[in-house]
Length: 88
Image 1 (cartoon, rainbow, N blue to C red):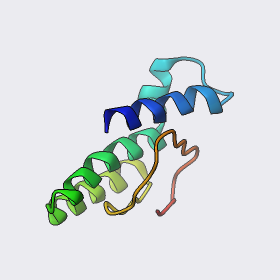
Image 2 (tube, rainbow, N blue to C red):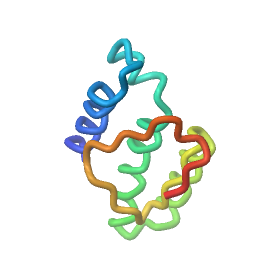
Image 3 (cartoon, rainbow, N blue to C red):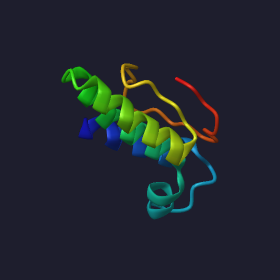
Image 4 (cartoon, rainbow, N blue to C red):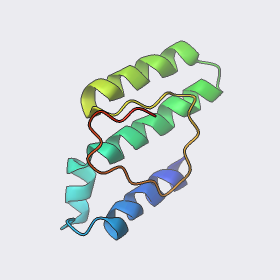
């Protein structure tokens, strides 16, 4: 899971020409936050803790505006820019 989060973070730095610093990417990119929380939620989903996974997913949706079902399988190096209202 950590390898995927690192790849997602690197994707921001490589794919967004507007990025100015790593700290900005870490603090100000809700797409990154949504993906990071999704990876935790997906882990719970795979561990058969489906209700808890859905709760974590809903909290993420509330915080980021990006809805990702905990059962969704997402590869590494994903970059979601301007993610408000995205449903995966």
